[in-house]
Amino acid sequence: MSEFQVTRRVKPEPTAAVVGRVLLSFVLFLGGLVLLGAGASDASSTPWLWFGLGLLAVALSFGLPMRGASQR
Image 1 (cartoon, rainbow, N blue to C red):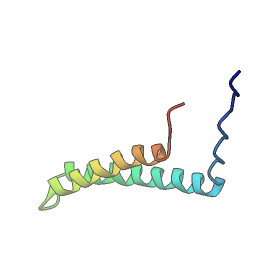
Image 2: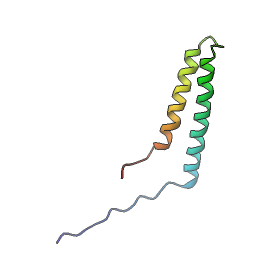
Image 3: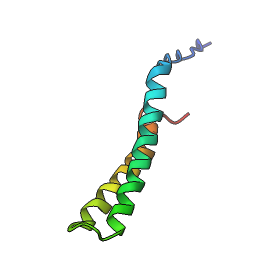
Image 4: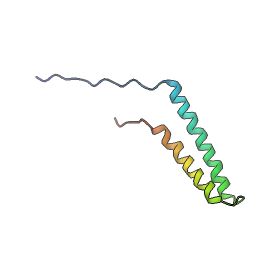
């Protein structure tokens, strides 16, 4: 009979790293919303730049927590 082996579970990240990543994601999301609003207001000479940066910040805020995630 073959020997059944279970792969060992990788130790989870430290709590401080997870909390830091969540806070950074929250700040990126709120900052992205502010930048989107600034780009939509037409108050500056380059609204497309602020809108694009806001879009990028919001996308990063959703992608950052997924870093290191794996399929089970």
